[in-house]
Image 1: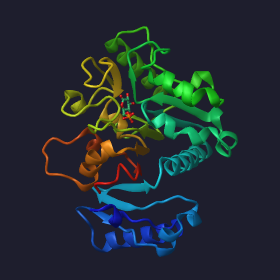
Image 2: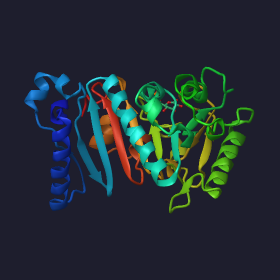
Image 3: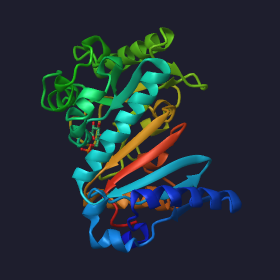
Image 4: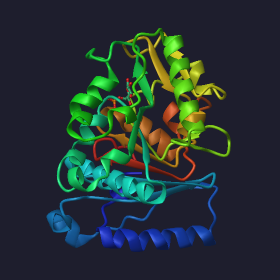
Length: 313
Ligand SMILES: O=C1O[C@H](COP(=O)(O)O)[C@@H](O)[C@H](O)[C@H]1O
């Protein structure tokens, strides 16, 4: 499906179309289909700036009773603006409902896409003291090492916001990969016991929001294509010592934990990710699914794509 079939709709038309689309799905229940509800919006294509410069489109992928939304943005800047609003809205939702917000960060390019959160209005409107921050994966290196996801998040985001230090759960970087994974899992189990973290019905922790990136090979967290860890279904946190992407030693959440999240944002930019994005959203007959195809949260998965990542849709 060409990008034009994920053409851009104005935000107001977007919401009307999504209800039409969902109504249609009630009449014609899909097994699994990608349903583009984008229509050419002449005024938009003439002058996208009229719609705040944000280009959005929506394809509701409904399959296995999980709602997935796909937003494609003209630029990474537009994506960052939308991701900040999405995150701030969920922060408001959960801090109002429960008095806290549990959010899981990835490393890599995701942190850069969170930059709008540390600007007005969000820097002042978000109740940062209610945030609890975790990592979906971490490299087994010192926290001040250039490869550390903690360092990346601290330098690029955390040091600019007043999150309580005790609410930032970094791994113990003095431990081996095995011990760091066990230590992090023990920490999560303690937080579920103390009700800082919700528990899903399946017994796994239920984070409010998981912010995932995806590599060009379709890996998410430190779960890589064809690696046995993608099948781990008992541990909450496991470890890898032969990561195909350096550094070799990492710890990572497993898919039962990732998929027990209430909300997942999959933030994917760049032309080198277009193939796995196509595979994940258009489906494939390949027996071996990519890790990104295994992401299926309890409530809602939203893809945040820039145009380059969406070129093969
Ligand atoms: O190594 C990692 O890679 C993935 C993807 O990173 P990206 O820069 O390609 O978006 C990242 O999500 C993960 O946290 C990190 O450890």
